Length: 105
Image (cartoon, rainbow, N blue to C red; front, top):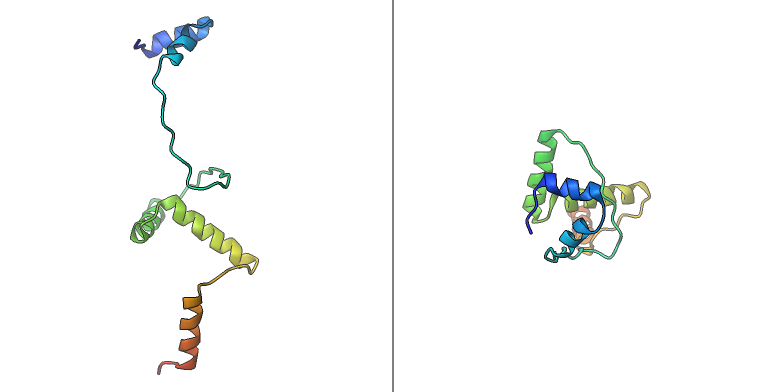
C-alpha cells in the first residue's frame, strides 16, 4: 500500500493500528555493518569551505573517508597532548639515519 504524506500524518494522529500495519508491511532494510566495535559519537563541525576542500583532498589522497582522516588527526593531536604518541619503527630508523648522516646545508 502506497501512502502520501497527508494520509500518513492523518493515520498517525488517529492512532490505532493502521500506521503500524502499514509499517509492518514494508520491506526489511539492510543496515550497514559498523567498521568498529567501539561505540562512536557523532558531532557536527563547521568548517570554512576551503578548509573542508583541503581535508577532503588529503583524505582522497590517502584513500580514506573525510571523517576517518579527521578522527585520525584528532587522535594524533590528543596523543601529542599527553605524550602517548606512537611512531612506526621505519620512521624511527629514518630519523636516526638522518641524524647519523646530516645533509650539507
